Image (cartoon, rainbow, N blue to C red):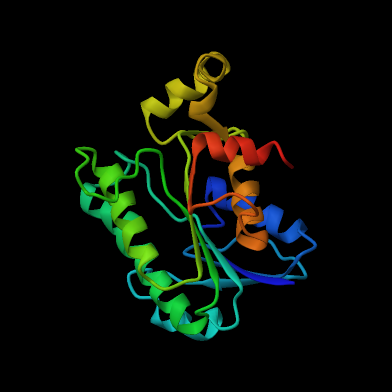
Length: 223
């Protein structure tokens, strides 16, 4: 039985991850940590409100005894200033991982990265550089298993207010886009289910720590 910490459960992918984790018979306890309350309660859910992920030291007792963590907290390019984007994309997951490793050094860490993430830091795209920087740092934390999920366009599934005009356009053309570029899209619920499954059960026979969009699609078809 797995005790799972989940960060970002009020977000699109994190919300689905919470549902799958709560429904998973192999998950004993879900500790959802976020900046906003969920407004829901379940027998095996423990909710922890934490406002500032720049300092996660106060979470040390909460993170003790965790078997796995799924980190889905993030921000959209263009939705926040660049400094805020970097802080959310790089500083927050690294700080959370630091405290998690101190409390549960044997935990598995699953990180919602992004397509094009560049650990070399040479990319001209800030989002790619930041996700790559976070990946590189997380690999060095010392967890026995760290998994990076690099989705391309994440289809929201449920209606929502899109963060910018680019996402509004992609949602509008999604049926055609999926047919023309099938390996460049992933449903939010499929992505979340794969992340939870890998965090709880491991990557089975698949080698490596990076799951590109095509890999996530393949795993989603396995159920």
